[in-house]
Length: 299
Length: 272
Image (cartoon, rainbow over all chains, first blue to last red; front, side, top):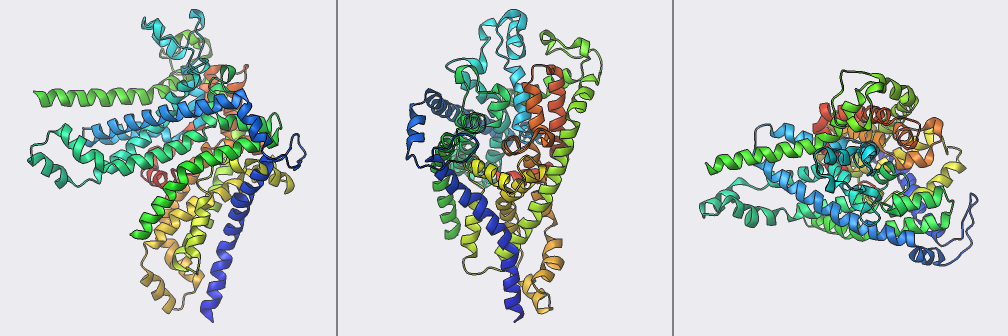
């Protein structure tokens, strides 16, 4: 009798959360998908079915094409930078230098800061003004060091503006990648390396042939986590560029989605962008989740 | 000799990297501490002539209401999400019913979605229940989207507590709530710390929900800062000081409770 009462109580305890998630995640996603095939423009919802018209418009839209190109470039460079810097720093710290804890904390602290704060500071460091009287940030530093050829238009560069956003993004996330790799390195049993050493392997060879293959799972996790951030990046780009730079030089889908929906009030169009963002994230994350889940079940 | 060179190179690289990570903080601080007269883009990288608080005072005057909004928002949403997560985690690990694991996976899925995909219905929903533009709408949003991650952390923690402990308490006559109150809750204090630090940091720093759901009166500090930075009227030195004020609470948490922060980070890295 008592058990069944507790059983009911246990279900009553979690049902608010279950109902909330059912509505706020599952129903809302379905709702967004419905809106993406609707004619909804303006403040009042209009669910007139228009098929894939919103998607067709998007793929013809030059701005959205730039967004997709920018996302591809950003993801590649951002992943490359974070993995490279993260791995290098982790290997350096793995040598157990003096002050290891301090260095680790310095590399990791940007993780605790909001992308908005990062953006506000970096928009001054990456100030695109190139006329000598108005130089500031890196451009000023380059000028003062006599390296004027390095002066750049940063995020307003018509072709490579998006690449400038990678610098603050990697500043914020490479320390985190370092922490992932360092945890991976520390979990490799020392006897394994010792054995390779006895066999006459140099330190470099040990990293190349013993350590690196064992770090593959870490790299996979890092790729998923960083890719997840990069596909939906929004606040950093908004804080640096406000509306996507010069001629959408640094525009990304999430920023486009926000302005299209909440400024231009083209809700159907905005929902279509949201669905595309959801699908790209799903392509990245779902296989990984299934893989993780399977491994857990096997254990 | 070769070892020595390698060692020196190691430290040079480490210090160069540290300089890179600290550089924005350097600019933030030297700009913030300059007097109004000194502020000039051409001397952006130079040290201030003394310690002046003008910029911080000006930024604080502008951002004080928003800092207070952020504080109420963060404290309320953090506590509520932690309580819900601890209950869910308890039930889903120690009171499993048929389908509990499936339900857990279904809850967890909410963590991985990009929030763009629920933003439009969210706004409509908040308008319908009359919370659009208000701080409570944002609190509700953060509580609900915090459920997956808090449930995950608590469930994994409770799963590690031996079932015998629960059974022993059961035999002693404790029911579901009694076991939670007198056995699980005291044991789960470390998890509460991890969850609350994680929630505090991510809600304080959050921008997308905040900029979409709140009216200027209820803007948390991230939205107000972004607005400050976007305006042509506010000097950039005040913007920098404002950025520092907005970053300070989470930085302090990181400095003093970094250990716990890192644990939450590893669990919540994939959160939307």
